[in-house]
Image 1 (spheres, rainbow, N blue to C red):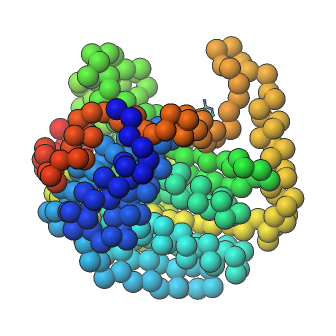
Image 2: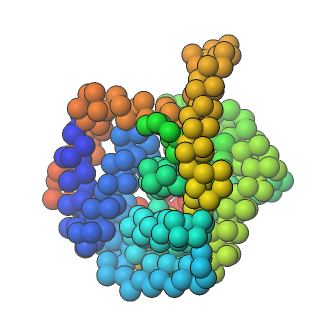
Length: 350
Ligand code: NAI
C-alpha cells in the first residue's frame, strides 16, 4: 500500500521510541530507513523495524549509550557508540569527519561498537550535499566464503563513495561486496526459482543453483571481491579494535548482546585539491559524457551510480508516497513491538 513519507517515518520513529530509543535516535534511524525505502532499498527500510524493536527491547541496542569521542590527531578520531543504535552514530561520526575535512582537507573517523548502520548511500549523499567526497565502509555478519574456501568468513561488507557535481546530481556508488544480497536468495526461495551458479555455495563449497541448499554467499569478481571485502574488514574492523572476520557478531544470534560493529568514514574536501568549482564542473561534465554514451544491446542508457535510486525517489515523490507491503503497515500501526522472534536464528534469519 502507498504510505506518505511523513507517515512512514513517524510510524517507524514511534515504534523505536516505544521500544526505548531516545527521540533523537529514533528520529535519525527512521529518517535513514525512510531515505532507503524511497530509493527502492526496501531491504534497508521499513522491513527492518521489527528486528530493531526486538533487539532494542532485549538490550542488544543500548538505549542510553555512554558514547565517547576522541580526536586522535588533526584529521583523525574515534567515536565509540557503546553499542547504541548504529544510524545516529554513523551520522555523528560523519559530522566530525566533515568538520575535520573542512578544516584540514581530510577527516577520517572510525565509528566503533555500534549496531547496524544500514544503507551506506545515506552517508555518501549527506557528504556530497555538503560539497565533500566520502568513502565509507562497514562490517557485516559473516556469510561469505573467502575465495577458495567452503565456509563463511566475511560479511557482505559494503563500501560506498559519494561526490558532488556542479548541478543537482551527485555520484552515489554504494554496494555490498557480494554478487547478490541474501534477500535475492530469499526471493528465489519464495518464488521457487533457481539462482545463477555464481551467487552462492552449498555446505561443501560447491557452486549451487538451488536456493534451498545455500550455505554461504560469494564475493564479487572472485579473488578481487574477496580482497576488497577484506580491506573493508581491516579498515572498519581491525583498525578500530573491534572483532573482525569470522568473529564479527551475527545479526540474529543473540539479540540481548551488543554487536560491536565498526564503520569507517574518510571525507576528502575537493577544495584542497583541484578546487571545488573545477571538481564539480568536471564531475558534471563526466556524468553528461556518460549519459551520452551509446547504450549497449539490452540497455536503454548508461546510468551513473546512484541515478536509478534517484529516479525511484522521484517516482515516490510523484506518487505521493512509498509502496510498502500491507503486513508491514499493519505491524507499524499496531500496538505490538515485535511479532516474530528473530532471536537465535542463523545468519540467514532461519
Ligand atoms: P546494488 O547492487 O543495487 O547497487 C550497487 C551499485 O551499483 C549502486 O551504486 C547502484 O547505483 C549501481 N547500479 C546498479 N545498477 C546500475 C545500473 N544499471 N547502472 C549504473 N549503476 C548501477 O546494491 P547492493 O550491493 O545490493 O547493496 C544494497 C544496499 O545494501 C546498499 O545501500 C548497501 O550499503 C547496503 N548494505 C548494507 C550492509 C550493512 O551491513 N550495513 C551490508 C550489505 C549491504
